[in-house]
Structures are given as C-alpha cells and as structure tokens.
Length: 163
Picture 1 (cartoon, rainbow, N blue to C red):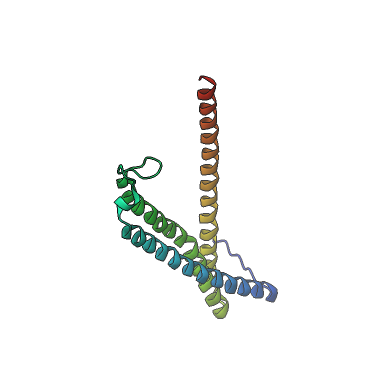
Picture 2 (picture 1 turned 90 degrees about the vertical axis):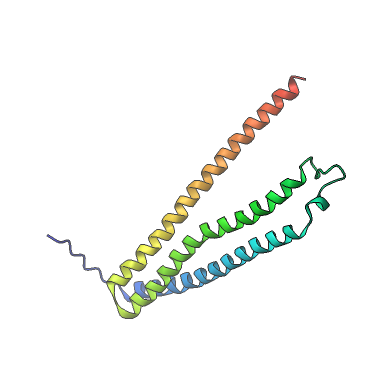
C-alpha cells in the first residue's frame, strides 16, 4: 500500500517559500560572484609571486628572512594559489545547491508542481547537509589545532625548564 501524503500549503506558506527562494537566489548569485573573485585572487597571487625573482627575495647568502631557502618561495606561490582554488571548489557546492533550491522553488511555486517542490527541497537539504559536515570538519580542525598548541607549549616549557 502506497503512503499518500496530501500536504497543502497555505497562502502564508507559499509566500514564505517564495520569499525564501528569492533571498536564496540573491545569496547564490553573491556566492558565485565571490567564487569568481576567489579564482581571480588565485590567478593574481600566482602571477604576482611569479613576477618576483626568487633571488630578490633571498638575502646575500641565498637565504630568505627566517632561514628559508629561495626555492621555498617558488613552492609557496603554487601552494598559496592552489589553496585558493581548493577553497573555491569546496565553496562551489553549497552555493550550487542553494542556487538549485532557489531556481526549483520559483519554478515549483509558479507551476504548482509538487515534484519540482520536492526536488527544490532536496537541494536545500543537500545545502544544509554540506554546511553541517563542513562545520564538523572545521570544529575538528580547531580541536586538533588547540591540542597541538597545548602539546607544543608543554614541550617548550619542558625544554626551557631543562636548561
């Protein structure tokens, strides 16, 4: 036996969903613009760091300030610009899901199509799920960083007290 749910939406619920769709479309567009700036920043950073000769960054002994070799600078430009590209890729998914929700919600409400409404809500669920997982990952990274700092501080304190 098939489970039939006949859900009807009041005018207030439809207005709230329509407003939600409009705001989500705005946020998605701003998100895509932000993605474009992030990618431009990655390209700009790589180009700017490539324009600086490695030896100009090094001191008289071929060392950069802090004792880093000049070759490290060359690796840093790729690493930093690559980091921005990775951030753009990660940031793309929640923005895309939000855009799909907004687009689907508008279409669903304009045509009163419950299948389109379902698809739009699935995209909203995916958006929230992605953000939830990223929040868990970031909290985990912060906890690991905090534990690492405690271990580092303890090892530095024991090294100082051993002198």
